[in-house]
Length: 105
Image (cartoon, rainbow, N blue to C red; front, top):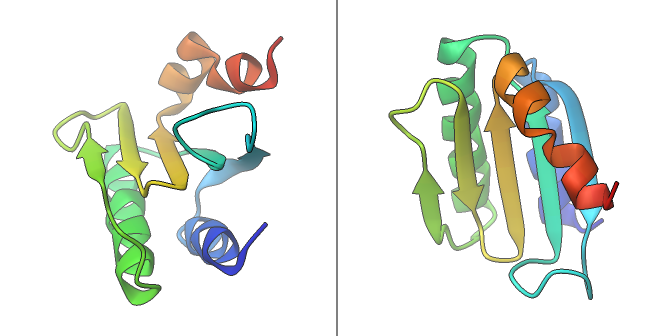
């Protein structure tokens, strides 16, 4: 885990994200090196977490490639090229089961 990934995880945890998971997908995924998944407490927290990830990315001079779902209340994806951050509501995370997909289960 590099310093940028650590900074993102710390920021998410400081902002009360639940169940923050880090996945190293180097060599397994051609689109990114790592994936971070977390659960937001509510819609307000979901948006705050997304904004915090953007702030950390800017402070660490990481390029923000794309942000998907800004107007969605259940799932926001922040694509930082090498790192993709998924911020999800509890229900959405359970429904999509992204952790198991990433782990290949």
